Length: 149
Image (cartoon, rainbow, N blue to C red; front, side, top):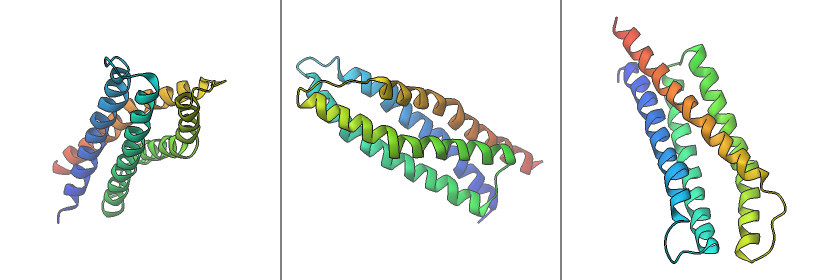
């Protein structure tokens, strides 16, 4: 198989990941709280399931990108971008999501939550993911074009 195919897969995976997580994080998550008849506790329970599934999908996308890098190395810029998205995903998985799940459980049980700053950190990381994933996709696309020349 042509190594250029792996660069294409990397580019498509990054762009697909971008669209996938944007639809969930920036559209589904806020919209579910506007659904009539769905209270905060139910919305949070649904959100926990969706974001756990999203996280698994994101690790899968990252694994695909890693595999493409083993077969066809990326550029230095691509390496830094993939390292950045890996770090963001690790922070979200091992720190932010567990804290947010614990806070959601407290709210679901009707107990007060003292700090909401963790949610804003998650939102910030989601916003940072947008240009990073876009640049991974574009950097890989640029590598495909330069290989054809």
